[in-house]
Image (cartoon, rainbow, N blue to C red):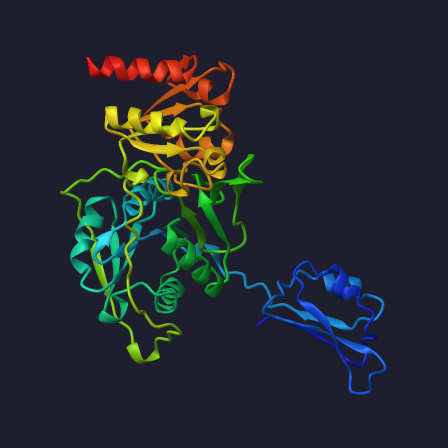
Amino acid sequence: MSKIYIISEKCIGCGLCIKVCPFAAITLIERPDKKQKLAVIDELKCTFCGACVEACKKYQAVVMEKDACVLPDDKSSYKNVWVYAEQRHGEISSVVYELLGKGRELADKLSVKLCAVLMGHKVENKSQELIYYGADRIYVFDSEILNEFQDDPYSELLSGLIKDEKPEIILMGATNIGRSFASRVAAKIYTGLTADCTGLDIDPETRNLQQTRPAFGGNILATILTKNHRPQMATVRHKVFKKAERIEKREGEIVRKSFDKNKLKNRTQFLQFVADISQKVNLAEADIIVSGGRGLGKPEGFQLIEEFAKAIGGAVGASRSAVDAGWIPYSHQVGQTGRTVAPKLYIACGISGQIQHLVGMQSSEIIVAINKDPECPMMKLATYAVEGDLYNVIPEIIKQLGK
């Protein structure tokens, strides 16, 4: 385990380490003799960045010992593409079927099997459905102790299975569970993790997974490689990839896994599941979305957006700037820091189309943009671009729909 500490005999209490620590993890305390102070490091705040070690080069009073980097003995021993089949109360998350579609593509390029890992209580009956959607093999942990998702038991079981079976690639949904869970698993098996991917591909020669995700606030798209470690892990946002095709004739293997409940550690206790009922419409599942942006000019503009959405049977979305302005709740936000959507029809009203927003909706089948600026990114991306004042255009569309 990595550790960092102060050699009291060498520390003169100069405070140089405090000045360079970006996390306020170091303080000075009085020594018993009160001649000089002593630096103390709070390891709960420390991220082992090494800034204090560099600052204390002259006195060498700060010592940092990091775990040695663990590399796989033979990368060629890692085979197959895995998808974590996230479920809650027996219902498979819809992102799983999207991951199976992309996973099938990657597995075929590598000429390996596509496997899924299903964990929960009374969930084995869902295994066949995963096979219909493309999985060749399903690993199933079915136990009452797994009835509700908890990080400790789930991460311990999955990391143990990974060490035994050695998959080459592991894909997980960038959901609340996935984001909490994936990083713990990656840390346990000493590998890297690329979060919130919007694109995946494979280099057949090196077998490196090309993991693309927004970076620097969404201003660029970075492609990340895990060259030296296996498995390669990535979480993927909902609605980025198309759902796999369901084929009932498809056959696969179901592998039932067991474990010793008494040896399974769990530092938390599940108390209660509270469903979120504050959101009227699930944006991620809507077929039609009408979104408003800064071009509305005022919060009252969303009354028109809501009227438009109601007229065509759609849900209401928004850009980040509209949410930040307090015009509409965050639950309606579409984009990198909001919901990723892929409806059949996406109508952007007064949205210029910053990359952060485009990342969240560019997979929509048909995009309609209504904007005064014909040169803005959204108008260029749109399937159909309507140049004009949205306060004139939208009422006319609603009027025509009424006829």
